[in-house]
Image 1: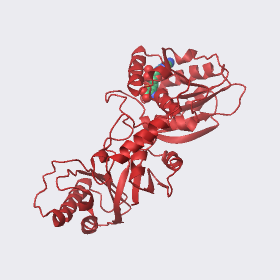
Image 2: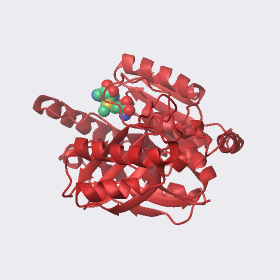
Image 3: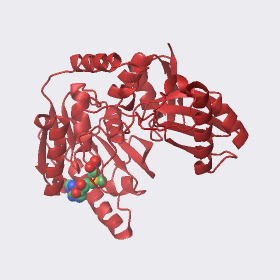
Length: 375
Ligand SMILES: C[S@@+](CC[C@H](N)C(=O)[O-])C[C@H]1O[C@@H](n2cnc3c(N)ncnc32)[C@H](O)[C@@H]1O
């Protein structure tokens, strides 16, 4: 049986998510703004949840219809086959968003959708009140340009939460964005890889996971594993297949930060991710960044400086790092910053830049990949 799925992702990552899906032999991949649709069978749902590096969730689409008013939203929702998926004790919280639509009140839409799902379930289960004491089937909706789409969230906790980083880490890059930066650098385990502003180690850890070809979701669970209509076996098969596809090579991944406490946290995170042995950590100042090898790739996320004083400090860091890079013309650099003057401070215009969003902050990934005699 074929289903329609949707993967929400950070703006700017749609093409990378689509590429990841195609590499998993998924056909009918359709990227849109901030999300990517595809058609697939139940096993694809398990494989994608487990293996996707750059997407946020895997949503099972139940239907999509025009909804310029509450009546249309109610009727369209009620017409979908909820009771085919949700058992009588299912917990089904509703979350979603409205964009560029006549319906704009999210709480009102949540209420209408909930009521419509209940009405539809009543016809199957003949209950007046649903206890919602069982497994969670979170309903997600989007109302975009007066068109409603309704989904069941098969992932549960968002996919960027791989399970290796505790919730309290500050100023860390989202794991999906770090994985996307590694992907854009084309690092797959060959040669030297460095992050000289590593903070909690996310980029180096994602590079190590990519080098090993380790499924990023291997040490976590997914909501739909508890759903009887998909069955348990697809998840077990997906995990076994992922483990069998891992590589076991020698890797040269280095991560440093000026703050020894950050290094301590990064080491602990790498330990939880099972890649501590693959990364060499060091407390050091990127102003004196140097390497012995002629070539390699740096993927990094230095401070941006959101406030004025911090901004001046960030500029100093870019200048000093730019001078250090002058001694390493054979190295490629992929650097994420929201600072509008990054290239001027760093001292060299990038070969290419790509707009990416770190949460709500618009950034550029500055890419230096051409042969050069100096930075
Ligand atoms: C935006 S954070 C990096 C976050 C990281 N990508 C993560 O996911 O946790 C920038 C990091 O640069 C470090 N830093 C600031 N100045 C530095 C310098 N001169 N040399 C090396 N690291 C520096 C800070 O300690 C901070 O951890």
